[in-house]
Image (cartoon, rainbow, N blue to C red; front, top):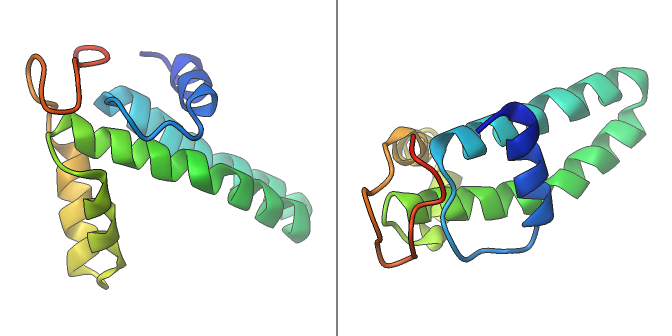
Length: 112
């Protein structure tokens, strides 16, 4: 999945918590969610903050679908609220390869 396909897919599924997200889809969108508000924030802090907040729900849904791809509940994203260790655990889960074939959350979106 390319950068533009990933961003397009995640923005289209901005409030869709069901299903699965492949590693490329998640990581390209995460890069987009870091770079775009940062660049816009350099020009205007207010607009940068608004863009960051607008991308927050799509980033949460993409993270939930990414955890679904490794056969974990999306609620486990809340583990990331634990300082340092929780964030490292969620990072580890997001880096893992997705479950081959169907899992509890449906068929895989694409192959990694």
